[in-house]
Image 1 (cartoon, one colour):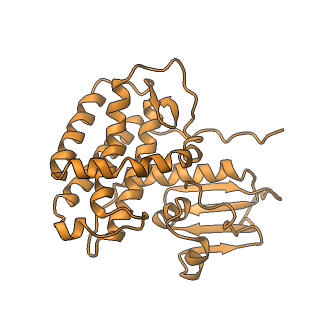
Image 2 (cartoon, helix red, strand yellow):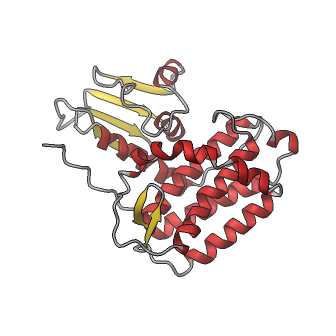
Length: 265
């Protein structure tokens, strides 16, 4: 019998909408300051340049408006906790489709402005229960917006890593939602109660098969900060490097998560 799926965490739809718009706004403010030389810099995402990454961010957000323009599917076939594991199949197609928009929109600020305007307008009267025919699968608008916090937080960190001196802030609600979704995905991938993963101040989950603790300090504990967790979960950082740099604290025989990470390709 397959393990029972973790009960989905509840997210405040109003806060998530505000978080998506806020983080996109932070990115827009930063991108408009980048020089041609900075936009030409490489990123840690294969062959993508900063310009291509910045254009991809607008595509990730525009997908909300685009999917709202489509006919509503008859039923959802993807839950929020399924989404992190459904992204790998689309990775190659996304990479292929990013260079063309970057070349077609030399004025990135204008592209960001149009994307933001469309998103704000389309969200004004769209209920969270509205189903979207997203590329990964049909899901509710409320759930899809939570996935956009992952896209925005991860790519904010990618841009900060690519451009020396760039320090785009992370909206607190966006970072919280991203951290929690990826932590819950770990609990789905490795169900159990023998290991406690702590990502203060946003998430604590139990995972990994083995003896379940009932009181006191659990025998297996992993603790890290939100951005380190996001990097581990998305493959930007390896477990070995994080432990070696003391960015992760791990104690107990079941605290090695290297075989479970990354969660997203």
